[in-house]
Length: 236
Image (tube, rainbow, N blue to C red; front, side):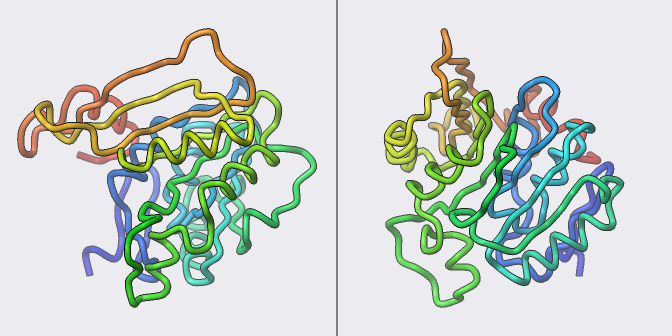
């Protein structure tokens, strides 16, 4: 079936065994997330299909990328996608809970497209529930784990719905993070932001880098901002 895989310029993402499929949120974060100069270790939390891990491996050719997920099927799928990519020597997919992850070296960057619907009703499909809700990983747990696993100059990048922003930022501040970048996402110029991409660091910055990204100027017409952001990945 056509929706069983997604063809990017440098890799293919197969997704038939994953609850959450390739979507705009993942490609936005994978294109936007930053890392310190010379970054050599990157962690993708809740890797799913492995999409963001693959994108980070493409963007940071010197880095070793680890993707972690609690779902066995997702880990198998992400491992397959990594092995079929040009970056197979630099991507490791592991099954596990990030809250129990032990790492003494620290990561230069952590990326996460976290569970979205913390306060909404869960769905009957357990795999999809765990992928979409904070059943297995709360915002506090995400922030505590990221703060513990990041190097002192590391960066945590996430993408969240607009109505989750204040809660996530509160949890981040409680564990000691500071905001360094914010990008609001509008689907069209006339609509209010539905998503935010936020970068956190362990030390405050002199000025927060703030921008607004618009995906489409009109139906099927990508904005210059979005086109430039995803140009290295999307075929069309």
